[in-house]
Length: 148
Image (cartoon, rainbow, N blue to C red; front, side, top):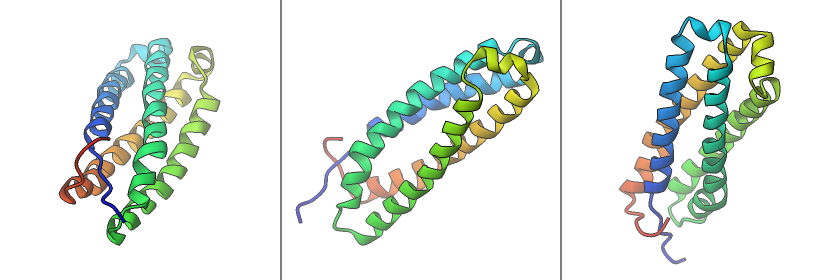
């Protein structure tokens, strides 16, 4: 089998973009005014999901297929585990988006919206940290370089 080449730069850049939005969301979550007007938080969450949806598509269509075809069984196994775990997180995100489609829904129950947003943001941050260290670093150490 020929070598599988890729770069984690694009994926790490997406994580950085997601991280900036998460920082904005956490600032809004801490603001006392958010309970009275959850609109700005809902708009920022919508931005987050736009970027995150693109990121997931890139991982699903480009990254994971290459990793699952890699000749290194440890790397294939790591990729398969992360891909499986991502499925459950994606389900949680889909449930969140269904429950909180926008500012009108958030305004109906701001306390629950804030609570659910904290939970989903925490899950996302944990996932990104694990992927950066547990998958992307493994890829980089495996000297998989070249086109993403």
